[in-house]
Image (cartoon, rainbow, N blue to C red; front, side, top):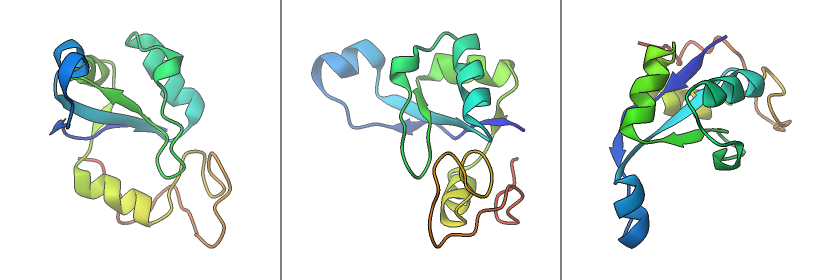
Length: 116
């Protein structure tokens, strides 16, 4: 099992939020919710920042937290890899994932999802 981070991208933020957090972000996601939260704890993220997205449960990371996650063992993947994972229905936790997804076959080892 692994924790993954995608590349940084320019987020559309304005005002105080942009000044406080910057405008470059990425996503951190994992093969299991427990593993994702464990990494979040390790790098100092609050549980309240968890984004329970049905397609890809994740945390948003600023550049410094992304670098820390990579130093702590997160695997860097491309945006294409993330998209392939979502399209293949590979969700956290295996075939039924974090939540059941009707009509989608999910496989932990999707041939379209290959970490770098």
